[in-house]
Image (cartoon, rainbow, N blue to C red):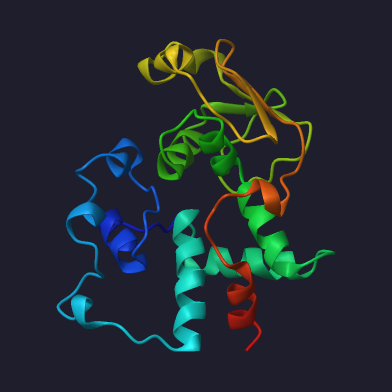
Amino acid sequence: MARYTDASCRLCRRESQKLFLKGERCYSTKCALEKKNYPPGQHGQGRKKVSDYGLQLREKQKAKRFYGLLEKQFKNTFVKASKRKGMTGENLLIMLESRLDNVVFRMGFASSRKEARQLVVHGHFLVDGKKVDIPSYEVKAGQQISVKTKSQDSPKFKEIRDMQITVPAWITVDVQKLTGQVVAIPTRADIDTPVAEHLIVELYSK
């Protein structure tokens, strides 16, 4: 499986925005964006004027990096979103939010989407009682996500029981039982990811 292996902090600096790719580090003073709030590279501090195409490209790159997808994965998701009823941009964000790795992250069971993806791939989660190890699995309304019984005794999940977790309105979580449920498919108003999806639609419409 292809994956991004370069420095995660460079991605935040390139987008001039925190993408929260490294969990707790992103909330601390160790965050690279706190020290170098300009794009990486020798010309990073000199970049100012951006074309319309550049704005559209940056928005697509930002969304792709927020959710941890590679180019082909993101394009395939956009194509599927364009075939559904409704606005393509909103469909795209809803599909990205409904990914199993993102739902695990939103439930508070991982400190970042990257960690959530790793936990899913390693088979720590069940969906409606069945093991699912595919991060891109699209969770439907009413489905329950739970930590596998054998995994619940690991230090990672034990500490979650002592945490105060805030989740979006479309998800419920029981930290003691290490379970959560998608009570409804998120709407655009439920998604706080700072992405202007219409620019992504404009980019792919060219």
